[in-house]
Figure 1 (cartoon, protein in one colour):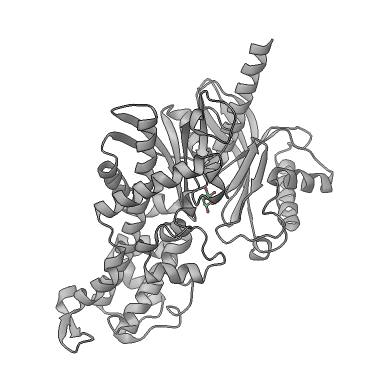
Figure 2 (cartoon, helix red, strand yellow; figure 1 turned 120 degrees about the horizontal axis):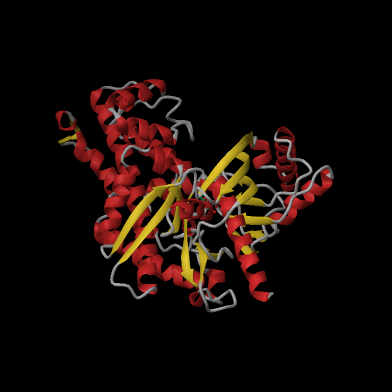
Length: 468
Ligand code: BGC
């Protein structure tokens, strides 16, 4: 269909539209060699992040999480979990059942976080969180019990202890004042004390990647990697303690939150950034920050596609050269449109109509091609990063062959029709000595937070018994 349309190119001669479109899409197509090269750069950055002194300047932060073990199946009890990381905030009551090796969500409640709170003061944000928690405790008749609490806080934090966690910076559209550089657990406790009408038990701070790994780890004990590809992107994995230079101790392992979203913030990915990535970064609320995430995650993919479609329209390769008001509006092309358009041409037609574009069949096919190109790059970049981690675990353990499981979550991974297939195919090529399985996490950031708390309790009990 694409080759059926010819049009004059800038030199005045007639060429097939697909060749002219391809010129703009080509920079998104990353060869296997390029991905290997990206993986090698990430490997170096991960080492820098793990280093005792180099980590201050590292783009990939490699944050210790103080999670020292994955579940062994003996954990049990009732827990509260809080989950803050996207546009909603959730409170959950979770029960871990040892006999059935199952984590049950007893009940949960979603509270929206309005834009003015996302961009307001930290005090307002934590007061809002404390109020939602109070409402939930009442509805569950749990007020008066001091259950341990797992707090999934999905932003880069320098964790000092399992219950002390300093926010390095906001990402994903949040920008509350007075929180960066502060201990998030303290801010939560202060907000609860300001109310003075209820209390909470011990707190364990968790990144969503860690929650995801831990919730899958209860079902599959070879799960040692957690990955999120949703509004934001990130991964964690179990690293050998002897390589975690910033934490005392040589024995055992610790989960490291890589914060791979920051990969490239030192300019190391300049050669693969397209003009569209640069534009997305420039117009974001945090320019220069989370370069890798902006090429991959749901918060940005729709906007990249919109900018490409706009460029092709300006070049008169699409929509008869006429953009609609919607196409000209930043943020109007939602990331979920990409999944829908790739799912079928009929969907593409509906969405282009919804965006008030004057389209024909060739336009609908070109729009699909653009979506496919942008989402494929995202999947292949994620694969390069994930392969780097799998290869590292394998060499860390001196194995010829590694069999491992990745607990994964996030709307892009779950909802896109071929994202997971593409990602898995590329991982097989980039980590040929690793046999990587994928397990979709069922509510990792809720149940996983409870699991982290449960494992921390098991280890504390074990430690106490040894001491006695
Ligand atoms: C945050 C990570 C988080 C990821 C996925 C990123 O923006 O920096 O901490 O794990 O989003 O939610």
